[in-house]
Image (cartoon, rainbow, N blue to C red; front, side):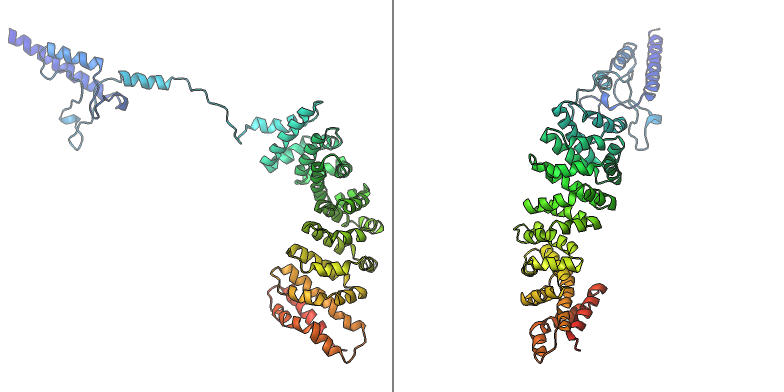
Length: 447
């Protein structure tokens, strides 16, 4: 009887073990339930209870925690591929706690990413903010708007559509100089898109910009109004508005009293309009530009030479510039260290040497030697203007009576330039090569 009882207990223990093995096959392998020793299973409550129960019933291989397998449970490499036990214990509890834990507080950090809703509301919020009565609120709104506009080009078009240009134009007349500086900066940014140009032309922003150019309290306002005028003057309607608002006379006076590259460039936009050119000649723009040639700043000299080239279109204006002493100063500037100044000076000299008096003065000032050296310049625009100016000076022989000294005259001045002109004739630039051929023909010309 005792043997049969032990057999039945052993049979029940084997059945419990088989049932636990089948249950463990349905449980996923969980790395969180591994014990402290790699490759071993941490004992769980159910497995330990099953093992004690099996041993109490007399089963020698009862429910034991850890690896347990049979022939059908092994993999192809004869290693165990089943782990018994339910996902319980400290490791499993920690995993559940992490899954249901509250995310820790994260400090706010600056980021360039904003929501779509903010992109839609921001232009209108900025427009409303600049209408505040507080100067501090206006300055803060203008600063935020400036940073917003530099983030993406589409923001400028959105801000223009929100109707900000008329309000910004009115802020150029604000009593606070810092508010005027911020408004001028934002307008210069909006002028980089065509919709901003159109809005400024409709709002007559030119008048306020010209007032900002004369702002005596803030140099930043003056410097920030000029770029907007430059961009407006690129369009015929913008240049016409500047001229109609009296900008030509005002800018000539500004260049005479406080010459700066920005003011000279703004005046150059007025000269693009025929009425502006006539008005500038009437208020002594030639004398103003000649006085700027003696400035110590290279950009001032460069834009003064460019304006002089635009002013000396008619023969009367050429003679006026020559009478003001422009030729001698232009010849001296041909040896300037900056290539931009050399190019602009050579262009202005090419314009004034069309007149007979200009040829004569340039020849006597030693322009041929300077121009011959410029034929070797590294900048192509300098070489082109030098070639064409040499052609103007070579035409001087047509207006004087030839003498026996003509051969000496040619060999002394123009023959050294012929060697380099022959090299330039083979240049790949067709315009430069043709100009060199024309100049060589003028030098070799005889009646």
